[in-house]
Image 1 (tube, rainbow, N blue to C red):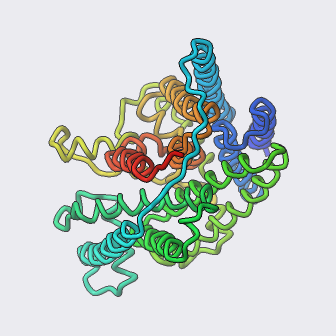
Image 2: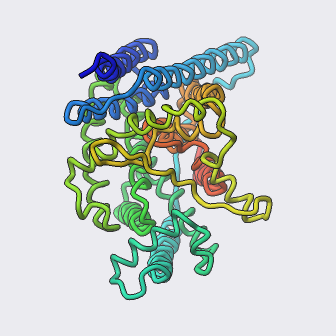
Length: 449
């Protein structure tokens, strides 16, 4: 092995070591606040980098110094943005407190959800499930004429990847509203079950049954969407909500951190198992072992990014491309402001060991659209956004909607180690409507006493 190859091998070891040091420092600076955006971001990259190190051991694949620096500096720009945002929000909070413009009156908050409303949501969720099932069969027949049900479901996945190819089978507005309503109510129910489980009216068997039935129907909707990532986003929301409750209920912060970290390992392994099992629904896991799936989805991002960055022009002279904000462009397409649109599925990177991947971390898409310098600005702004949101929660922990909003929007931070999800999911009309409806639900069912 040449000295250059050895240097490249050391880059992965150095990357894992650097991320571990950054994690320890972030834990210390945030006083062991594992829900802080910076810690969530670092943990995501640490998971994929450890997996990449394993791939390096079994196949001698490696990354360059450039890739190491791009990953580390992107994370550092995010951390700087978050730190600046926290200082800014903290200073504003102190100024407001000094001016006496803050309401110090203690208010207890309860939520009351009418039984009839829950039954209505059950009907809406059930109707949506049936409509989804009919849609995926009809759209699947566009690509598989004589296939069975599972084959049609797998074929309908093409409509998610290339929506223009399925324009002849439109997804009705009623079904979209049904999906949106079920999701918002399900996220609200998770909050109630974790934070308000001691309330008397929530202890009723009828209410509990309706809650779990709605959650079950929501999971069926996620299954029928053929996109496994929806389950991962939901699990991240549930875990983050539960972790907030642990911080609230445990008097000793370090004890809460130990409980949360132990549970995080279990949730991650459970997520991998669910991700693999759902692959049989779309035929993606038929020829893969769970170990191959785990390594394939967590170990090759850094190598794919390395191949992309190997071309100097990709970093510095690439024009603004279509790889980010495709949710926003979809809206512009519907109103006729852009001539064509389809989801930006990246081309596959081919590796020397015969494997391939089209997952490059979030860094690839941002660099492709905004150049390397623009990607640093992007990650800085991302850090500012999440820093403001999280610091606001720390200042006012009684704002239940802010906690739910943060938990709902946390998945793009963790997923940065895999894919860019902030611009492509958060910046979409569906997510905007999601936030508005969720706020409305928290508002109308809130009771102060």
